[in-house]
Length: 482
Ligand code: BG6
Image 1 (cartoon, helix red, strand yellow):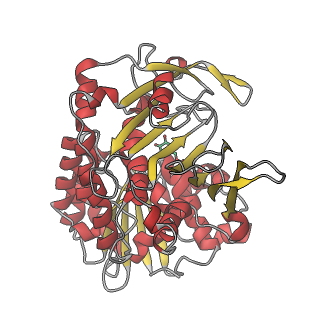
Image 2: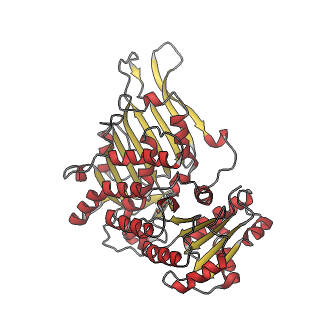
Image 3: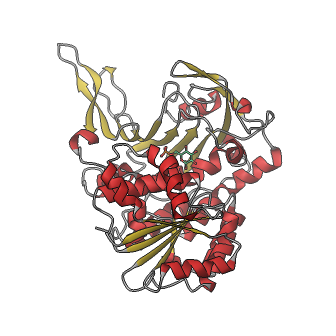
């Protein structure tokens, strides 16, 4: 059961609140993990009144809830209130403070203020919150991405929020960190003595991290065209997966220790230079093709996308972590829209057997940690096939985590909202992590801004541009079929 709370959504009528956040809270409510003394206040510019807001919630949030039970839904809706608050209108923040009352954000009652708005509203919102006396001891500010579009803008956001809130009050959300298998990576690595001695360059030849989507840009064309795959996925989700995969054992699972360990990885990433910024990064854009047998349009034909757009919908890069554990190991990161299949996976490729006794068959060991579409951990081994010949074949120790642990999983946002309510920071990014990620990628952004390179085309439903497949092949990793 969580702490008693007041949860306030700026951008309360927006897509994220309707599609993800309210459905996630409903699930927590139905599972009995939300404190009975918890209320949710949606904020928006228009004066909808509570009834008007609930109508919107009914129309826009309810359809995103599987297995909804009517009595639970009705009791969940009783938690919801609404207030018209414009980010620029200081006066309305005093009304918000009035509605929240004195208990919110004081002794044991969490006040969680979720900024699901464009980042340029963060500064005025934080200033007006402080002026209305809402930066209290137990106030937590949750910041939704995009947290900047380059290093300078990320620093501006950090500075703007830090002017009114302490770092321990700021929860920068990356929903990938709320996914169960991401946390399971910590267990796999640090609760199994077996793996730690193998987790290094002496044993591992390459690491690949993939987040591939079948979806295109949906209705977010305008946003996506200004953003692209590097900013939308790589700077945050992929780098967070990289951190969890590569970090040194943290001293504890406490907030600071986990975040320090992740920062250690980001700071050890080998900086790009004039050569690697081009040789180690591939950017692509999908053209028309087929997804699951259905014809789909190319990116430049999508709604709200310029027909000359050079925005990348695919990015792959080869990174190196310059520390004793990983020096020399290529980390291959890739993400793309309209790829052949939905896949989020981390694969560690081991070196081939040093003294191969078996003359035929066999490929080096691999360990795969799959987040999506199904949660699994697979260790690929070589086993002798029955019979007189001494040939080895690949066979996998295959953990289907949904079968092993069939209990309900909290969705990523549900988990992270509960953590914010309970004041647990470990799964949120700290300001220095955010800046370290942007700092590392800034030379790539600068290079792209200077050259405006034409992205390499790849057909929707394919595995991305050939240049990316070749880059992986050069590291012994096969991206031709996956
Ligand atoms: C979001 C991106 O952060 O993550 C989207 O903005 C992307 O473009 C989404 O589709 C993917 O998340 P998931 O959880 O569906 O893999």
